[in-house]
Amino acid sequence: MEKKYRLATRVIHEAQEPGDWQGATLAPIFQSAAHEHQTAESLSNTFAGKGEGHIYTRLSNPTNTVLEKKLAALEGGKGAIAMASGMSAISNTCMALLRAGDNFVSSKSLFMSTYLLFVNVFKKYNITARLANILDPESVEREIDENTRFIYLETIGNPGMDVPCIRTLADLAHSHGLPLVVDSTLATPFLVNPISLGADVVVHSTTKYLSGHGNAPGGVVVDGGHFDWTGNRFGDFKPFVDRKGELALLDRIWREHHINFGTTQAPFHSYLTMIGLDTFVLRMERHMANTMTVARFLKTRPEVLWVNYPGCDDHPSHETAKKQFGKNGFGGLLTFGLKDTEACFRFIDSLKLVYHLANLGDCKTLIIHPWSTQYVAFDQGVKTGLGIRPGMLRLSVGIEDVDDITDDLAQALEAV
Ligand SMILES: Cc1ncc(COP(=O)(O)O)c(C=O)c1O
Image: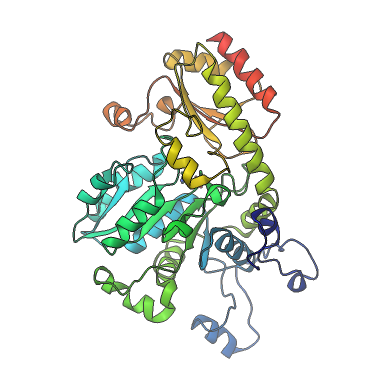
């Protein structure tokens, strides 16, 4: 679409082709495992990568392709692959970049499964995730050596809530000939387009705000298409550069990992995600406003020992977030502290409106006690090191009437 349209228009109209869909205004669900070709030559050509035909849904699917085009456009990338989950997007991207013996430098402030993948699983392949304080570019730079392949960060750390400066880290990565990979799940294109700040690859769990209804697991990798893969560190990318030029990484992710690991997105989930996208901007405006109100409310309560939300003036990442996200807001997630685990359990058990479950970015308000759930199997020292505390609650603020959210939190705080 032409650049002049704003995000709220583009989420609805990007990649729309009603003429190809019998006039339907939403892409149909192509619920087929494979696609028939009328001639032997046509199927052979499609296998050879000529044209845009489809072969088999594990490889590509027309419904998924529409979502891919929409998300690539919304992130300002040159191509995208929709996958079965955010973790598929993260693992496939990293695996495509890494070889045995390599390392990469990552923020310590990571989503729990990403942390486990990086620290535990990659070890099996002799790959080291060098965890650094992403807010301190010098400490990131100290970890880079000749075997480093990329720098990785979350736009807003989950659940750390820290906001690194993408421009600074992209410049740092590029000065060493490295790409910057950004998980922008918590920020979404509503807050920022990391590619416009120099990031090379953006991954999302579309399960969250992009779909918005907590009903469609999914992920996406968006390739900015501006990284130079012919540099010294990436000689092994030559076949992919020869084949796909600026989209060499996306080709490698697809060809080596996505199709062979079978991390296919269900076309139905792409369809649900696109329904969600139509109302994305409206929902995000409400998430941002509600979360700010809830953060301010929590700060007034004596039972609440601390509130961690980059929208608060006293938050260590407030200035960076303001600069990076402009007037758009500070995200829909926050953490806050009660006295201990018992207080958190009493609080959760007293909630009447807020859902208690392991997700975020739903239009409903959601709560979880990370210490006893997502991190329950973690070594105590490790979880403390990651900033997870017994009295910490993570709240994903929904789009209900904000007075109903704060009323529910207030009555549950009375029970603490
Ligand atoms: C920041 C972040 N990245 C990635 C993921 C993984 O996404 P999925 O659950 O869709 O695999 C999550 C899930 O909560 C997340 O919060």
